[in-house]
Length: 163
Image 1 (spheres, one colour):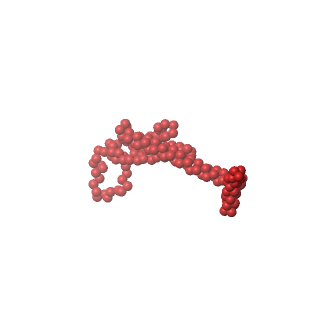
Image 2 (cartoon, helix red, strand yellow; image 1 turned 135 degrees about the horizontal axis):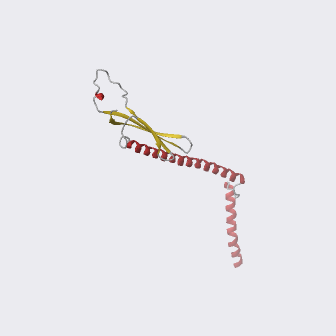
Image 3 (cartoon, rainbow, N blue to C red; image 1 turned 90 degrees about the vertical axis):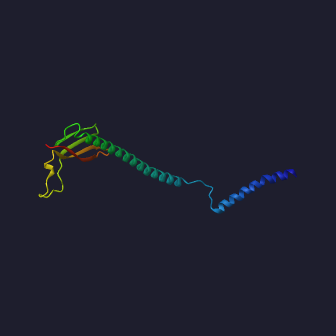
């Protein structure tokens, strides 16, 4: 009789497994894996998504590099503008040069012309003053990674001696 008990205990788990298998099939579960076509479609979608993400990342890096170069060009321009009238006398002139291999500059100094002319009846104090207002314009140019020339243009007004 002991042998019959052991046989029943072995058969009960097998019966439970068959019931579970029948329940899965009735609920629509498949015991097969993915088909080759499904795997190929999944890899294709993954590859396309990775391509788009790489382009987005690349544009972000290029944008950051370009912003860094614009910041450097602006720093060079501010530095050069600060030296105008300090290192050399302020007079009407034009000059050009290079900061380094990547950045070049062009400076133009000219007398300031008032965009709103005065009426003839108003006293012209500018003729009485020993100084003159100059417009200082500086352009710093560089070539970006896309081979296009980029320009930072800064201008200011400076007070200098009359010429």
